[in-house]
Image (cartoon, rainbow, N blue to C red; front, side):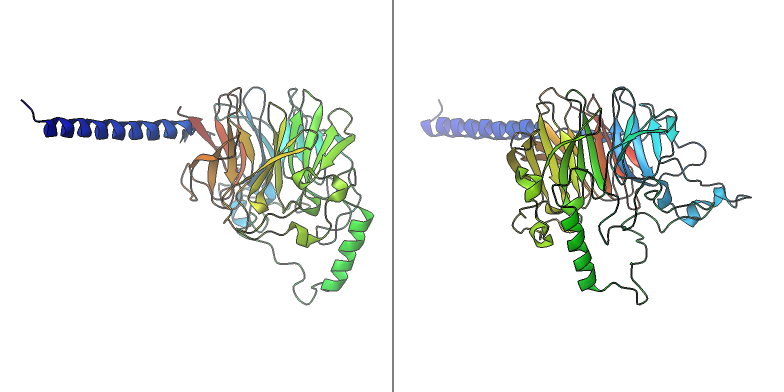
Length: 422
């Protein structure tokens, strides 16, 4: 017969074992809540016509789950353009069109060469909207411009200056065969403006900027800066645009007439209340959140009518209603420095869109967040040049099955696909 001590010991051991099993099971269940993905090395197939892709500045999935890629052909350097010469001095490469259409199997099924830009979306009829110095709508079959949003006729001093227009925003002007640019942004920057004794006087520049901002106040109902992102809400016949003027404004336009409808700044403040003082937009890692957006604003609209504005330079995401009423703020990796952590915004494909998928340019991760409370439930990826890694993770798009597509700038200059495992 067993003693009472041995029985108690056995019960205690069983309890510990069950407790450990419960903890293990709980951790396993928790781990399973985070989406899991694997890299697809077979997508896309090699580009045709000796094309080499430039930095990816726009990405969208159409109604057929095919992928549109906006890239910067003028990122390519001389050593990448030998096949453009007459006669060619090497087998590769030539500049691709700026807009490339790739199907689910990885084949290029269309393209056209619009002026370079930043941010894009595509509607259910296949029309492509590209952020350039404004938003322009293109017929994908012909590449013909069919509409554009109004913008100011001049740029802010120090932001390109001069007149604007599709040709002015082509990113390098006339292309000479075999002659490329300085390389992708962030890795091979062009020479700093003002070298050789031509640096503008800071006081003169500050006065010019102040005069410009007085002429075009934050409430200006048109595009004033450059474009960061475009998202279409076809059900409401509206277009959401992230204009980078004053470090970021959310603007809403009629999708049919392109007329301005409304807009807001950080915390849902009216456009007229956005500060023109750069100090109000400043952010230091782990510091207090600025009262206005800090810069590089990207946006997306959820199926339940919430607008997610990712303020990359401040490592945060603002959630508002479609009318701009502030709901909540999520802070992500607040110690992240230059470049920021909160880039593109995607949603999980379930009906409730339970998770946010956030691309992180600086840390080169995809973060998975609970959409309800912003808590991080997982992350994927790291910096590197192997398949499944990223060097300048810039753009993210998610198809109807939850497949993730990514686009890189810097030396990455590629698109990749990640297939859900759970």
